[in-house]
Image (cartoon, rainbow, N blue to C red):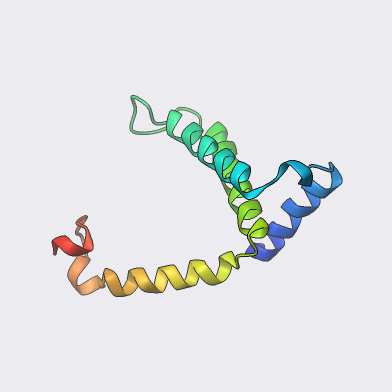
Length: 108
């Protein structure tokens, strides 16, 4: 499996090869990411499970690509922030308090 920086480099190269960087400002990339996330939701409308997991996988990949692109544009170390946020959530939602619970941290 590749690392986040490796995936980010692939996305950066893809954009550079097509001379699309001129259209890739952070605001527009963020908007595109949210639009793609909406397309993920379409697979669940009126159902609990998606009909076509291959198509859902493509939509999730689109979200991932835009996420990597956005973090790159803003020079954010996504790997670092992933681990920082996960550690914060571990403290906010300790296993001994939240095991089997689906409540928010301020409800327990």
